[in-house]
Amino acid sequence: MKSAKTVLRQYLKNNGLLASKQREQVLNVFLKTEKHLTVDDLYELVRKKNPRIGLATVYRAMRVICDAGLAREADFGDGSKRFEHKYKHQHHHHLVCLKCGRVIEVMSPEIEKLQQKLTKKHNFTPVRDTMKIFGTCRKCKRKGE
Amino acid sequence: MKSAKTVLRQYLKNNGLLASKQREQVLNVFLKTEKHLTVDDLYELVRKKNPRIGLATVYRAMRVICDAGLAREADFGDGSKRFEHKYKHQHHHHLVCLKCGRVIEVMSPEIEKLQQKLTKKHNFTPVRDTMKIFGTCRKCKRKGE
DNA sequence: ACAACAATTGACCATAATTCTCAATCTCAT
DNA sequence: ATGAGATTGAGAATTATGGTCAATTGTTGT
Image (cartoon, rainbow over all chains, first blue to last red; front, top):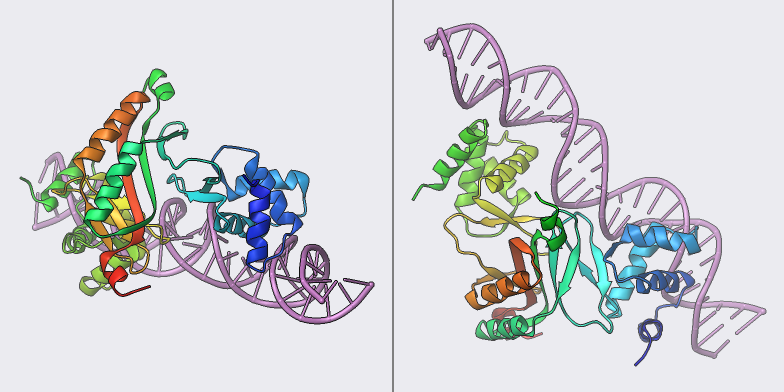
C-alpha cells in the first residue's frame, strides 16, 4: 500500500500541481497526529519547522490534501473546521463531549447498512455522510455536574 | 397542545425576558415555512412586515426561539447556519443534495436504537445528535450528470 | 392609567475564520 | 540550466456572527 506522501505526490502530478516544500511540511504535521486539528493548530505546528510559512498556505495545502483523499473535514460545532485522517482509516462516526470537547470515534456497520437502506428507499445516491452525537463523556460524567 | 406562540410567551416570562413585537414577528415568519432558512432569509422576510428591524435582532430572536425549544440549528455545510422546526416535529435526519441543495427529512427509529446502543456502550450521555448524508437526489440524478 | 425600571432594539463596530490578490519565488519538464 | 506556469507570503477583503450603547419599549406595582 502506498504511503500518504506518495498518494499526495501522485495526486499533484496527475492534476498538474507542484510538489512544494510547504505542501509536504503540512502533510507531515497532519500525519503525525491522530487528533482533530484546526488549520490554526496545524499552522502553529508547521511553523516550528518552517517559521516563514503563511497561514493561507496551510489553508491551501489542507484543501489539496483533502482533494487527494488523505484528509476529510469535520465540524464539531466549535466555530472552526477540523481535519481527520481518511487514508488507511475506516469510516466512522463521532461522539462529541460538550463539556471537555473530547471526540470519540465509533464504528457501526449496522448503522451504515441502515443508511444504505434509507438512501435506496429515497433513490438518493450517497457521496459522504456524517453522524455526530453530542453529550457528556464517561470521564466528565464521573467528575460530577 | 399549546401553540408555538404560547410556548415562546411562557418561556420569555419564566426567564424574565420581554415579549417584544420583533420576537413575535420573527417567530411568525419562522413558523410560516417548513424550509431550512438562514438568518438572512428570515431577515428579508421579516422586513416585509417591519422594514425597520435590524439583522442583529433577528439573530437574537432566533437564539431565544431555539432556547425556548421551538427551533433547532442545522448546518448543511454551505457556510451559514439554518433553522428547522423542533416543536411538534419528530426527530429526523437529513439527506442533502449536493447538486440542488434540496434537503430531504427522513426518520429511522432503527438507527436511533443503534445510536442508543452505541452511547450506552461508551457510557456516553447523549444530548442531541445529527446525521446527514450528502449526495445526489432523485431529481438531479434523472436530469443526468 | 402611569411611572419606574429593566430588557430590547437598531445602528454600527468588532471579531474570527477563511479566502483573495499580486508581486516575488519556486518546481519541473525539456 | 532555463522558461512557463504554479505557488507562496503578506496583507487586504469577505462573510457570518456577535458585541456596544444610547434611545426606546414592555412589564409590573401602585
